[in-house]
Image (cartoon, rainbow, N blue to C red; front, side, top):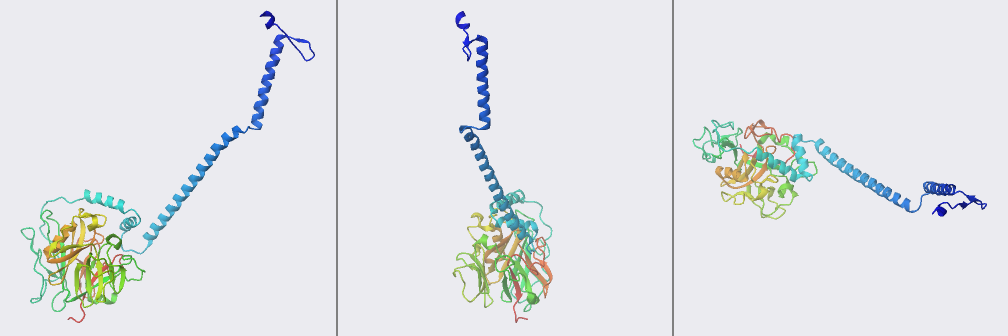
Length: 424
């Protein structure tokens, strides 16, 4: 071992080199080679290393582009939504901002969300049964009633005993046609379980009036040239105005007036019809998509709620009775029907289901009836205490909209009742 460990190397000229010196030089050569190799890699990377580095850079670049595309898409969608919402809110309207915002949501893909929110709200605010009875009813009408000898409907029999003063008794509304007011109104308590609930009912003598249907500013959708109000030149003979039905996209019904079919009529739908001879009816439509020349107007809204003098049997079947609210939720509801004499009956009340509003009209004498619009923003019946649309009054004082509604442009379609020409 001594000889192997002490063996000396030789230099370039063949002279011997000490063992320690040879080892030291060998180590220095290795270190120098490693330094050159490392420097070479830093200046000129090999082929395998760039591949590993360029790949994450490419993935990162794709991610950035995807994020930018997503951000741009979201920004464009938001801009489109904001533009649509702003345009709707800036359009002329006689409806409050909150109601229009909800309607915009409903019309732009959020009907389900609106329905859920409304259902929760109305469920949390559902009325409790019972409670103290009312002591008085709201005063309605401006005169006692029809003249003697002129037909008038019988008083509505009281549901809650004892009856309150004037309950179910018909009162005139002011203007007189052919010796008596052709529009009578009354109130009564329709449900013993809710003794503070009050229903309002109007009776309209179709032999002494003419009824007109007017498209609204936005419903039904049209060319925007409709007056959407009672024409000023016709207000001298105006007796009453009242709301029509659901928006057509909610009811799926038809709308025809003055020869113009805004939406095709559907067989099987309840329909308020006015004929050119002046008669008016509420019945199930069977006349095809376009009525004949004898029809002045036809407005549809869901199936009948009263048929043959009895409430229909399907009034608890699903949401059709309230578009998104259904039948189970108690809200403001309105309805119109005809009695056995062919005269019109209109009814409205808060906290109603489709079945309960049907019972109100049945008690008032309707043999056939259809639901009209619902919710406090849309339920309206106004009458006028003097000629010329003077002294406007509501059928029920707690109806939300003003008594002058329909005397200026309105967003929804409506009905107007006039004294028939030629009757003194």
